[in-house]
Amino acid sequence: MRDKQSQFEQLLLSHLDAAYNVAYWLIQNDPDAQKIVQKAFEQACKEFGKHADVRRCLLAFALRGAHAWIRQRSQPEDRSPTEPIVETHGQAGPETLSRALRKLPLQLREVLVLHELEGWSYQEIAAALEIPRTAVAARLSVVRRCLRNELQPAAIEAERLNRTTQLRLKIA
Image (cartoon, rainbow, N blue to C red; front, side, top):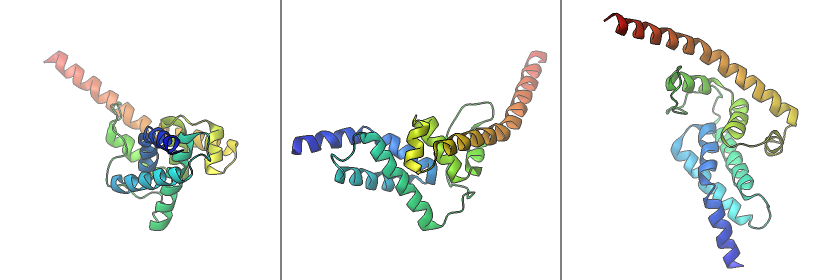
């Protein structure tokens, strides 16, 4: 039995990065995200043998921990984090994407993180968040539209500046 528990814990450890991603993207605070993941790991270990999908179990505990953290601090959904959410190398720039993501309400950000980063199906998200599958689809549609509307003007401006720079280099 102890050997199976040890194997279970090793399997859980392989999913810690995914649990951290969920916690961090939702609360946007590194030290607290780490604490949430630690608690999620401990809870999952206590649930040994009760769940068939270890990864889903761990991420569900991380998700619940992030929700509890937000409720405990009464954090408004549009509060700016102290750190950027992601680093990316798109035309809009990482600061523009971070700003756009910070503007998203928690309900939209969580479905985006679970679906796009963690690869969860609509059904898995619906079960974890205890909402209908159609609500997941609707939230993903809204979040994609919000991000597109927010990022498109910045991308157009970045492209205009890029062309202007290229033209100046050709002239010089």
